[in-house]
Image (tube, rainbow, N blue to C red; front, side, top):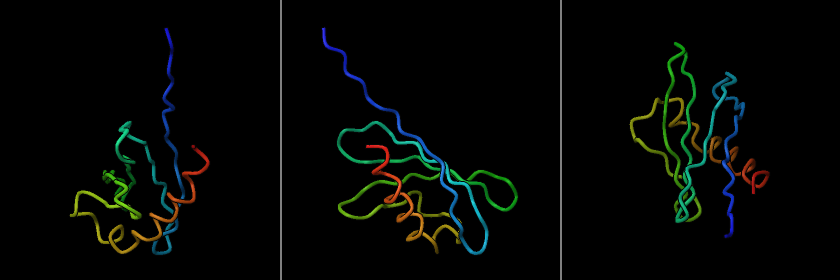
Length: 90
């Protein structure tokens, strides 16, 4: 009998967007076919904003498409922060 372990990956990143430091929480969804992260962050009122990030070719796609403007305008910064963090977990 052979035992195989799959590492559960989750991490938090502090990312400065529009002059505010925000804590993003990421959790990797175990899917062998593609890299997918479930993410959440608090807005100004303290409500959680939930979204998914999927690796499509060389870029990360966000879903749903109706995210708050401050996330939409800073997707590039969020993508880069995730790309910088991923090698630490592989």
